[in-house]
Length: 337
Image 1 (cartoon, rainbow, N blue to C red):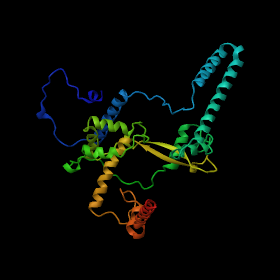
Image 2: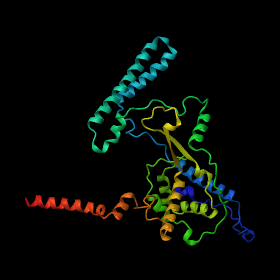
Image 3: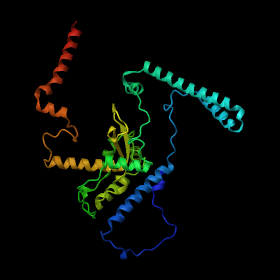
Image 4: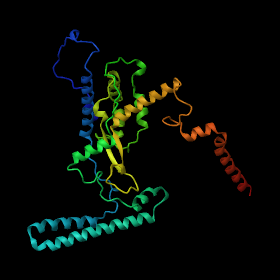
C-alpha cells in the first residue's frame, strides 16, 4: 500500500517537452527549497497516517477492569439518561452512580494490593509509583492568568527567555555536495538502529518505527530529504517545533511557582534522525583531526567517566579482574571439597 502511494503517477497522454529550454542552473530561492522540503515531508507523513489504523486501548491500560464494572457503567448511564425525562427515577440514578463508583474504587484497591504483594525485583518502579504521594491538580503560575494563551506565553518567557545576544546565522545558499558528503542509506540505517520505537514523538506524533518502516520499504526517501537540507544549508522551521512537557520537581513547597517545574522538549523524530547523522560525522571529523581533549568524558561513544578512570588509574583497571579471579578460586575450592 505504501509503495503504491509513493510511486510517481504516469499520465495517460504522451507529451513532448522541449528540454533544451529548461534552465539547468543551480540557482534558486532558499525559501522555495524550505517550502519544497516541508511539502514533501508533510505529504509523506500524510500518506502514512492515511493508511495507519487508529490505536485501540491495550489490555494492560486497565488491568483491574471487569465485565461487572462494564455492566454497572451501562446501568448507571441508562438510569442517568432516564432521570432527565422522569424525575421519579432520580434516586435510582444516584444509587447506580454511587454503586458504580464504589465498585471501581474497590477493584482498583484490590488490584493495587495484589500487585504490591506479588511484585518482583524487576517491577520495583511500578510499586514506587503506587506508593508515592500523588500531587493534586497543580497549575504552574497558579490561577492568575485569564486564559490558557496568556499562561502559555508566561511559561515560554520564563523557561525560554529571548537571547539578548543572538548569533548571526549565515543565510541559506546552495552547495554542491561532494560524493563523500552525500548521506546514503547505510548512514540512515545506522542512525535508526539506535532509535527506540517507544521514544515519545514530537508534535507530528510520528514515532521512530514509522521512519524505520519507510526506510525498509524505500531506502532512497529519507536520504533524499536530508541531502536536500544539506545542499541548501537549511533547517526548516517545521523541524524546530517541539512539544514541551512540564514535569513537577519532587519535594517542592509551592507548585504554583514556575521554578517548581522542569521542561522536557519532545522534538520531531525526523529532526533527531538528521541530528544523529550529522553528530556521527562531527565525531569522526573531530577524532581524525585531534580536536578532542584526553579529558573528554561525555558525548562520545565508549568514553564515560568510568572508562577514563580505568585508563588513568591502574588499580581501578585491575579491580574487576582481581574480583573475577577470587570468584574462580572460590569455585575451585568448592569443587575440591
